[in-house]
Length: 199
Image 1 (cartoon, one colour):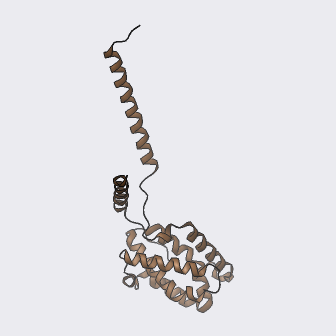
Image 2 (cartoon, one colour; image 1 turned 180 degrees about the horizontal axis):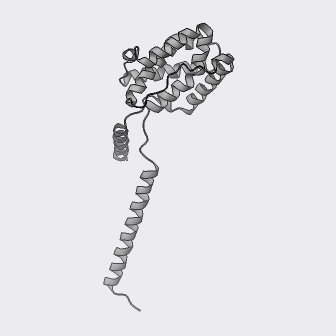
């Protein structure tokens, strides 16, 4: 049985169309399963080692808490109705307060404190470079509430409680201090185009 050229060409076109559809389905599935990665505004926010060090420091301080302090929370909960960048900058203000008023008083207490302070100073600096005016949020209700509760606890007890909640602060910074999706997508596309141009 011999096939003519028209039959072979028709089979090849059908096969090519089927492959194109399968390729498109596979590509679309990959895009859906791997959405555009949002870029953090500061590299330490994406560093697993920094996350681990923050968690260990927080747990270290929590083990020293008095029983009556375990039910107190200094860090106000996030109002998710606000824009992410506002939440980010508010917590950058609280981070700045930690750096200037809390962590240096706890520095002898934990072995990774020096590295953590360096990482957190980097986060603070990066966020200010990205547009967070930390002094603008000084009088924000959440920042004022945090400082007021801390003052009520007084001295070492308050410092210890604040350090015990540094994991909450870092989680808020991690979750809200990201480039907006459109900017992240544009940066990723630009980086891919640059990489392709170099090849």
